[in-house]
Image (cartoon, rainbow, N blue to C red):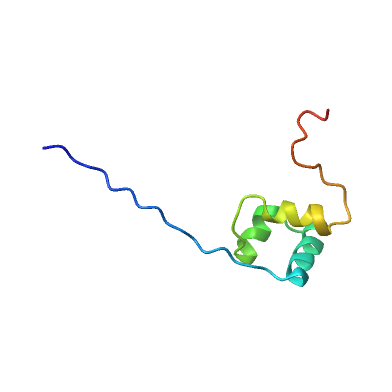
Length: 72
C-alpha cells in the first residue's frame, strides 16, 4: 500500500495596523534601541518585510528601495 501525503494549506488572516501604530513602530526602530526582529517580536508583527515597508513609507532615514541590487 502506498502512503499518501495530505497537505493542508493554512491561511493566516492578515492584520491591518493603523497608520499611527506603524508610525510609532518606525519611530521606535529609528531610535536605534531595537532592531527589526526585536520590534517584530515585541509587537507580534508578522511578515518578513512589514517593518521595512513601513520605514520606507513613514521613516525619516533613507531606506534602499526594493529591486536595488549591488548599489547600481
